[in-house]
Length: 54
Image (cartoon, rainbow, N blue to C red; front, top):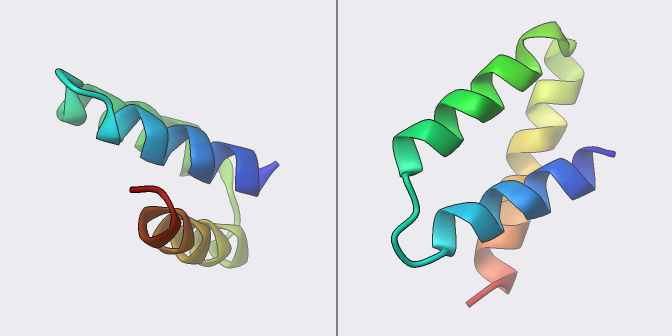
């Protein structure tokens, strides 16, 4: 689940003409209910996907 959220986030950010602020806000609203461990894992996954998707 976290892997899919991270992948979707990175692909939306990388899309040409993306409203980055809106995407970031949407993610922040989604993760408010997550535990601290889940948030840390999500950060790691986002960093992994940012390196892998060009």
